[in-house]
Image 1 (cartoon, rainbow, N blue to C red):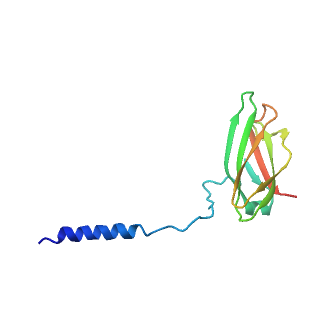
Image 2: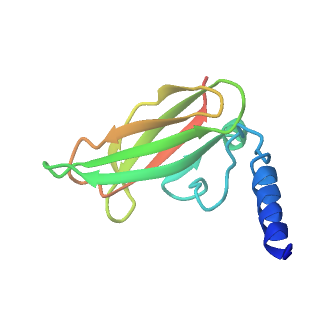
Image 3: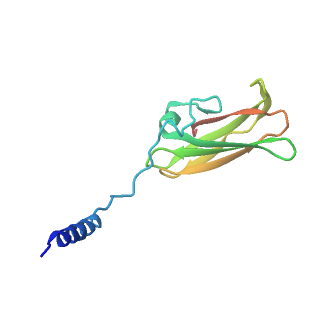
Length: 139
C-alpha cells in the first residue's frame, strides 16, 4: 500500500486547520508617517508647541472655482487619544507668495480623539494663487 498520498493529504488538512486559527489583534490607533503629513511646509503651519505635538495635516485639496477663486480643503488630524480644540485660518497669497489681504478669521475646530476633519476655505477674490493654513491651540 502506498502511504505517500495519505501523508500529503493529512499534512494539507492539518495546515488548513491551523491556518484558520491565526487572528490579528485590533483595532489599532492610527499611525503617522512623514509620507502623508504636510506640516512644516509653506502651505500648512503649526503656530505653537501644543499644536505641533497634537495636530497634523493628512491632505490638502486645491481647486479653482468657476468664477476663478481658489478653494482649499485641509484634512486636519488629531494625533492624540483625547478631544482637542484648536483654531484654524487661511491666508491667501498671490503668485509671488505675497498676501492678497484675504485672510479668513480664526475659527474653532473641535477634533475628537484620533479623528480627521475636513476644513474648507474659499478666497474672496481671484488674485489668490497660493495659501498658508495656520493652526494654533484654542485660546
